[in-house]
Image: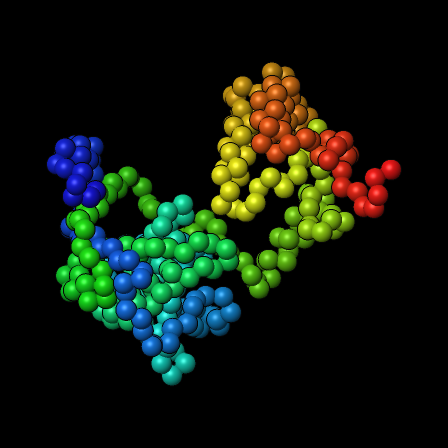
Length: 301
């Protein structure tokens, strides 16, 4: 809860069984106003040997005042590390708040302003077509507030975390993990290829289009930031919700399989196909067979 929210929200949270933690300072910095640093930092995480990965995770786990622990979003953050004699000794990690101009610092292992300088410089980069961040936001208390101020951050509010602890043992392991060079990676991919009939006849690997499927060309979507893509995803999500158990498009009689495409029934085809056609243009294929928008080469006959 942020200080501008007022006492009414705090009373409601307490009444609902939430317990407040200590107040912290909310700090923001314009990336163009943060000093640069000459210290060399490495980006985490891929390609490091297991011993270095383990040390980085231990450093992160011991960091004070973590806003977003590395263990919660291990592969969705940018982690910058200071090394000495081939070993990581200090870290700062941050994540992009997608759809905003902000990057958020999840934690810092030591009171070193140069780590915050590096975090701001990293947030200002355009990486893998992701837009630059204009601001970096952080939460801190005690001596770390002064460290952030010296790095170019400004206090804008106070923030208090309210927690609710339901009964039962909390999960101690991540429900899923990202695989790269582990043996399970290739085995999972082989099973996927077999189950979904992956074909390599197109420029990009694809799956065999099932009966009843409808395919559109995505030329109308320029990149992942295009608002059209969000509208397409919303239409598809609506069709999937309609086909879930108890949904409007659920069959009234038993089917041979439990898996169904959102376009295999009349209602879903009307609800989804018309909207997608309006967004993306004419249907390209039905049942995997061309029906329009076919690309040709050479003179038109």
